Amino acid sequence: MFAAIRSAPFPLDFQKVYVLVASYSAIALAFAGIWGPDRERMVYIAMFVLTVTGMICRYLLEFGEVSNTYNFTLFNIVSYLVIIPIETTFAYRLMAGGLKRR
Image (cartoon, one colour):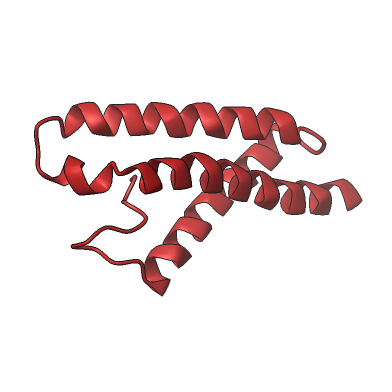
């Protein structure tokens, strides 16, 4: 699930960005359905914890493989820890706002 944002063998392209945005927007929709509106802080914290947990599990799963040297760069780690929770929280806010108006 956690593909590198970009690396030498796998450069960033539109398809990767689209899949990331669509996947995490679906998670935001699930949060909106479960928690309802006005829970942005909880969504951000949950996504940050889940992102860190996923990265740790992936690192341990691929421990000793060459792919860890180009997937787990400082840029990729910081990008995931910043972009994923913020994008998911933003999508949640949009979707929960739509639920609130109904």
